[in-house]
Length: 273
Length: 146
Image 1 (cartoon, rainbow over the protein chains, first blue to last red):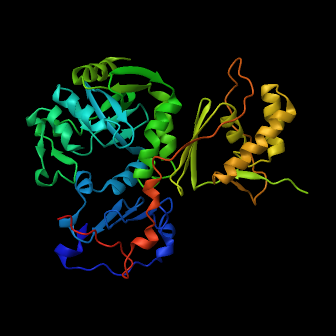
Image 2: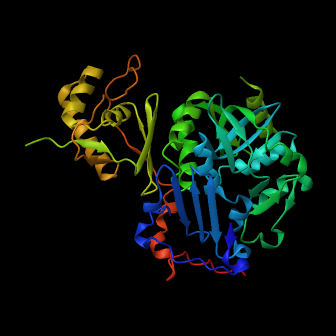
Image 3: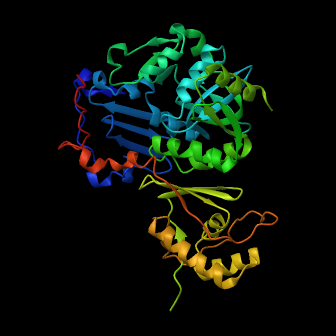
């Protein structure tokens, strides 16, 4: 893992043609069941992973100019490819819980995953992530935390206690989401993981309400942002997510300004089953 | 004239079925689709590759429906799936195996299939990586924000 600016080591010309780059950034001739290679034009970085040798490489021009979202959840593609190699799935989801049980909060950007999960953390629930979590479907659905950070709209900071975390980029909140470094108690909860009791698709409607949704609707809320956010992921990714949606009940959670009721709704699902 | 054999455009299209709903994701366009009920059954009938006549015959039997209506719906819907880049004309012909379609729910009736289209992820693939690299072949460094 290196950057050219700090190391002074330039990157040699790529051995592929620009025409080999697929729409999402995968490098066609350097991707198969074993090797994964992607050029991320959004962050000007290269990720590679050799599933057989379990070796990864990550390069970018200049780490000081790393995109803020990349610094909050670094090495995402590599972790995703590694997870797939051990039949797990890095999933675009927040996760909160207690007593070894957790719910996944799924959906695209702006659905309310971060604010809901941080409100739950502030209320005393365990926090496993607000954006990307590691999910195992077999033998039983289980979620693990990966990143001890959270990203949220600066305006949402006012809804949370000031001691919930340290804002890493306080001077740049006019153009970036706030990146919160979470304190040690939350970080310690990352590794152990928890059994997944529900998949919850939040959406902001102005009132708090909870309703069951079909497994298909659950998958539709969870899969597209995961698949596209991970450059198409790998061939087994959608199958894993479908298996999860078929196994765990799904809900639609309408979000309103009454944060306590939102936390109560999530807590009820953690305890259900 | 030999009837065209149509197949799901893998690996560009990734898809899964849960009960009576299919999700199909086109990784090239960033558009994803939900297909429910009869639409899901038509989709599953093209996995493995098949012709619209064979699919229409199978689904006419499955639903006990009017054969000409099912044939007309299957032909129109498969054209729409082709236009969306989800089905392609297969050069391999028929493939081994039979479609895996769940048992029909009691009371289910043939209805005109619908293709629900979602474009909220399409922005992610609109950036063209080919034109985002510099003369060294690597992505251009983003301009400083300040």
